[in-house]
Each structure stands twice: as structure tokens, then as C-alpha cells.
Length: 590
Image (cartoon, rainbow, N blue to C red; front, side, top):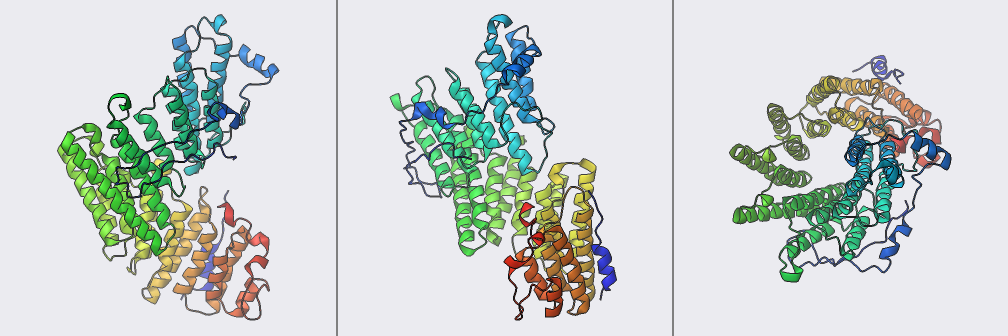
């Protein structure tokens, strides 16, 4: 077996460096999650306080102090025409979508330039128009989305020094856009939809109700009529929500759009649901399915299977409508198929995985027939199928994943972090005694791709590394194969410790200690190695309850008592809450 000093060499560490925005809005809730009924009626509640809505928004000052304001105006750019002015605003808007820009500062600058032009219109020779105003709203809309994406991708934005507004979060930015909208005399449909877009992409808990309130305000405004985009954005807001009724709301709004499109005479509406609307609802199914399976129990997987069946029914309904009408607005595209595949990928059954594979085959044939890029499978499409196989307990799963990834590369689509992590997870669940080597090969390919492209979309994450360690821990081969798997597991730990862009978390250490239980025979050597790993977790403040539970499985009582520095009862039990807080201080920070 491994010598203690050998394993300790592997473990050596190198030092490297709301408040609620609006009250809830009730809808008639007769829609089931299958979304197949045509009888739902979408009826917003009536609000008596519509005209006082702006009082619920905390108006954070966008103007500078009087002294700095005059300084700002003296250094503000001058414009020869309205066209030049609007072009300048558009330039600031484009910067609000860049990870390389201080997006809050740029959005604030856009607003300040617009406000200055309004105040000094007579001196400038022109007045800002509706396009100017929409540009300011777009700046806060883009700012909202960029803040969301930066957090989701763990992307650090440039310093926001020089800010003249108290905006720090997507919620703040969306509120800012709303306050501006309600302070403008006659906002048009595009202005409303721009702000609704900010809420729909903000992914904050307040967004669905805020979007509904905007719709209600539009319906009360005789000069503005909500259109298809308005309702699509409202579906987006609900689809991106974690609220229990999010899927029912999304399907209900979609069916209401259908009812509006069938109106005649005075009830005739410009609202016409399209494949964009269908895709928004399918996204809601995918999100809800992910929520169900995160429960990791039988009930959750059964509900996810219901979502899969309903999403497939909606796809078939849409295909039938396109066939009957030949209306390109109803032709399913790659987003349609990918979303349905994604819903099926969550179910972890052989049947649903097979359905996902059949959908990929179907869309590939459609692409061959049309040559239209709207039907071309992309990395998300392939990753959905990789994810499906990674969750399917079948001996063919690893080979299927390899084949899909090879096909993906041949099609010119690059696997991303999720693709690689799902592939690693697939090998972890396999019974192949050489899976540690397979996983190591995937990690090396992933790291090489990241070094070559520096693309955040393929950067290994702590989850990727932890999943690889878990794969090593699950080796059920010969003693030599187990020894090799353990070496690879410790090599992965050292890789994480040397990586300047990721850090170990509590799961890293608890999984590695669990690997010792499966891959090393009991005895002093195993206890010594486990203690070394535990000391690392203690020093990093990453000891979680599972870490101690796994430690107890690999150590004798005396070694356990020593590792816990005496915090062990005579009967071998321990009280996790009584362990030193310094050992646990960083568990929830990762």
C-alpha cells in the first residue's frame, strides 16, 4: 500500500495567492403544470394605488452634490446635434454589457448626460427625445443583466469607483430603471418593455410581481397597449423565478396570450404568441424540473418526469400548429428542442434519456433539411444530452458521453464547464475500475482548453474537481487500481491548491477523507493520512459535519480523539456545534 510519506507529499500545500418592491399580484390559478388546458383566464388584480407606485420605490440620488454637479457639467461633452447626442448615449449603453467596464458607473453616466441635456436644452440647441430616454433605460437594463451574469459566472467586474449612485445589485439597477420610467411624462411601449426586460432578467425574488405591476400600469394607460414582447417578458420573469407557482404562472400567461390572439372586434388584440413564447414556457419547465430533482427524493423525480411529459406535449402541439399553418413564427427552433431535452435530462431514467437522444436526432435531420442555423445543434444541445446520460445508471452511459462529446467537437461546438463536469460525473457513477484515469484525462483536456482559450465557459470549477475526487473514491477495482485512484485523488487536491482561480471547499476535504475509507485498508497509516487531510480542513476553516462523520469512518477512537483535540465523548460521539468555530468559519463562504 502507499507509504504515509508518499501521500503526505501529495497533500503538501503551496502558498498561492431588499426590501420587497411590490405587493404580490394574484391571478386566476386554474392552470396545471402540464399547461395543456385552454380554459385559463389571465386576470390581474385591480390596484387602487397605481398612481402612487413610485412612492414604494426608494429613489436613490443620481445627481451629484451641487458643487460636483457644476464641475461635472463644465466637463460634460458638447454635442452638435441630437443625432450625435443619441449616438453618445448608445455608446455608453453598449459599455453597460461588458465585463471589462464598470457598468454601474457607465449607466449612471448615461443618465447624468441625459439629465444635463434636459436641463440645458435651450443652450444645446436640441432637446433629448424618446430615443434618448429609451437609451437611458437600456443602460440600466444592460447593467442589470451584466451584474446578474457576473455573479453567475463568478466574474469580477472592474472597480465601480467614482459612482454617483447607490446601486450595487441587480435589484438596485432594476429599481433605478423603474423610477426613471415613472418620472417620465409619457413613456411609450418600448420604454415599458425595456424596464420589464430588466426585471425579467434580474432573477430577484421581486421580479415577477414587479413585471406584473408594469403590465397593469400599461393596461391602465390608454396610450400604451401591451404587445407580444410584453407578455413574453412577463413569462421570462416567472420562468426565472424560484417561486412555487412559477411554472403555473408561465403556462397561464401563455394560454392567456392564445385567448387574446383569438379575440374579434373590440376584443381583438395585437398579442400573438410565437415560438419565442413557447420557448419561454419551456424554460420554465426546465427550471422547475431542476428544482424538483434538487430535492433528491422520489417525489421530486416523479414531478420532474411530469414536467418532461408536459414539455414534450407542448413541443408536439407546437409542431402540429406549424404543420397546419406553415407560419414560420411557430416553427420549433434549436432553443425549443434544447429546452425539452434539458427537462428530460433531469429525470435520471433510461427512457427519458433515450427521448432526449431522439430529439437530438430529430433536430439534426431538420438542420440537414433546412440548412437554417436556427435548427443547428449548439453546445447547450449536446450538453443537455451529456447531462442526461451522466444521470442515467447504465453501463453504456460513459461510452455514450464520449461519443456525444466527440460528435460535438466534430460539429465545431466546444464542450463547456457543465459538459466536462457532467462527463466526469458520468464516469464517477460507472463501474469501470479505471475510471480515475478516465476522469484525469478529462480534467487534463479541460485545463488545456482553458489555458489555450482563457474562456470562462470552460474553466474548471471547484465542483468539477470535487466530482473528479468523488470518482476516484468510488473505484471498486483491485488493490493496485485503488492505490492508483488514491494517488490521482491527491494529485487533484494538489492541483486545486496550486490553481490561482479556484479554491478547495468543505466538500473537497470531506470527499477525500471518504476516499481513504474506500481505497486504503484500516490501520495507523490510513489514520495518519486522514489526520493530515483533516488538519488542512481545520486550517482552512472548512470543517463541515460530513467531514467529521467521514473522519470517524477511517479512524480508530484514539486517533479520532487526537484529531478533534479531545472534543469526543467517551462513547465515541461528538457534538459538532461545540467544535472550535475557527475550524468551520469558511464553510458557508464558498
